[in-house]
Image 1 (tube, each protein chain N blue to C red):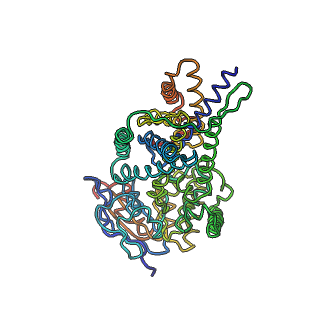
Image 2 (image 1 turned 180 degrees about the horizontal axis):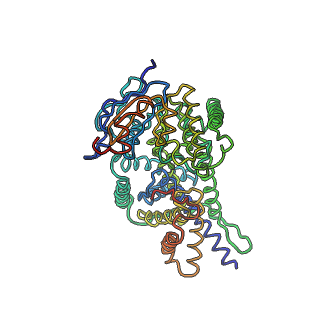
Image 3 (image 1 turned 90 degrees about the horizontal axis):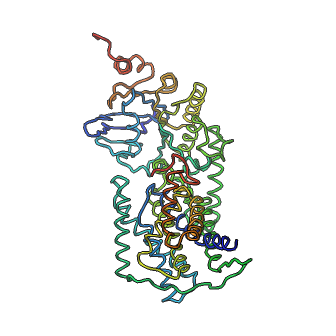
Length: 291
Length: 257
């Protein structure tokens, strides 16, 4: 029994990282109305920013999270400039292709600049509690708290601010929003930056939780965030959070029954299963998606 | 006689060889209700899209209050005092009715992100202003009771009324209505007609595209008739009703005529 409870705890903890990246993904998708491919690389850059803060600057985890947030935010601004702003006239799919290009450049560039070998990330919060035979790491609780604070912040931002309202408006109908005087370009920049920044934070947590960062970690991370978002309903932010946690649990249960080699396969299987059974996801809005 | 507020000069939109809007001259006088009618595919909605900068003008000019606004980006249309509704309703479906209207107030409030974060006095004043004005506006169109419902859950006719309210939130001098009564039953239609009259009586200029002849004839001061992208007639409802070109556009040519 403890064995299963332990799996559940580990799954939720891991899922909290996926949830964070999926929220970022859902945010960007909602604003752009398109799937983008730079996602995994944004997570990777965030992870490295956190890693360098922890190792070279010897900062604490909080500064590392801020570093990941800031680096990914800036990268988000750059991506917007290169991938979206320069191509206003082309068909929507242009953005899809430009993000594939930038993703490749980032991945290869990171291997040249940051090296191809795995880097060891120092431990943060090594302690744990034992509750009825189930071990709960301090870092696991910490990750959940980070997820909670950031989602609450995002929720307040969307609910209480004018810009938040405009973000929602743009994600539902760009034309109507523009004709009401909403500066769609500005909203796109902000929404994209926020989405990227959340991914940056998830990257830092990913590095800290697994004690490693490497230049090609974005591939699998991007897939996980996509699978989580699809599971939750693509552009639904609460859906993405739930989808991420569920994916974490499924993965750990899967590993329990098969082996750890199956970890990434499970994300793919879930992706396929959701698209077959319920393409609009758990909290998706039927007929509202542009994808 | 009142001044011309919205004017087009030889306004044209060509899609390849298709002349969707072809050299249309139209003058809308301030304070009037100006109707645009024409058979399906006459270019009415394309004409609205040209006015609001949603598509590029091929040739000609749009003047608003005497100022050339040809090719203005959609984001700036509300700022100069023009707002519109859409034939295929374009509400923010998963927002509340009140929030839909609130987005429209964007052009009228100034506090930015910083104000929202620190929640200073100016921000709170703006928020109160928007909430009060929003509810008042919903009252005006008869939607106050549904203020906190999702827009997607409203009935079709109610959605059209909400779209009008949202357009009014930008405080437009000219309101463009694209088939505001489409798909409505007779009682809903007469309600919309009343609403349009009410908006007009408050001094706003209205340009309305509509298929329902009874509605347009009763409502409009001036009617412009488009057919295959060309303006074929303009005048009072009585003049338009008896124009032979209009009759043939709608009913076809009489044999031997």
